[in-house]
Image 1 (tube, rainbow, N blue to C red):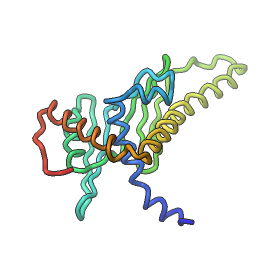
Image 2 (image 1 turned 120 degrees about the vertical axis):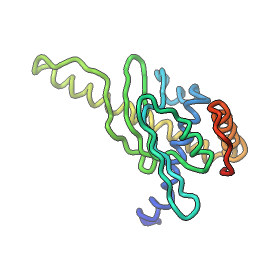
Image 3 (image 1 turned 180 degrees about the vertical axis):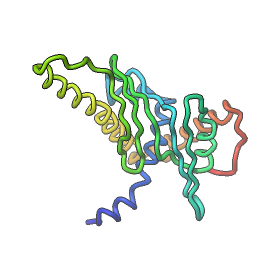
Image 4 (image 1 turned 45 degrees about the vertical axis):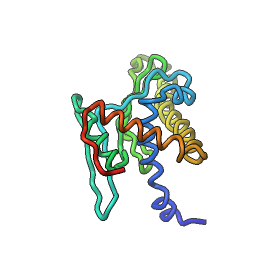
Length: 187
């Protein structure tokens, strides 16, 4: 049995691979994500993304944030071998919307902004309000759990190397061309 620290260090790349795949899936196959939540309306990249490139001897980190920030730099970083380590997501399910940051290494949530709820006007409404808040916190966690399980099934399948990875590379090349980004000698 692996020591927890050894296992964490050995497999932490999976979360960052997941984040990179998630952006690809949101852009190219949103229907696959709807299988994880039938009420899913949209799952989009928000206004923050952190990428990390550990190839070579050093570590390079790129942070993109801001309402008007383009993701061209992220596309370029991915073509050079970087992976997404943090990403703000906007999740719409039914009539509700959540905004949160997901960390790739631990799949931890940061700063979940919940949908608006009605104010509690009476003590008798308190229990219902608490249950509603619990539901609102659980909903994005359940989505990410389901999407991550879907990703792992793909990642461990025979199609990962001969279908998914080439499709991701094609998507990156299309994004690079769309944004008129010069090709690099990276992956």
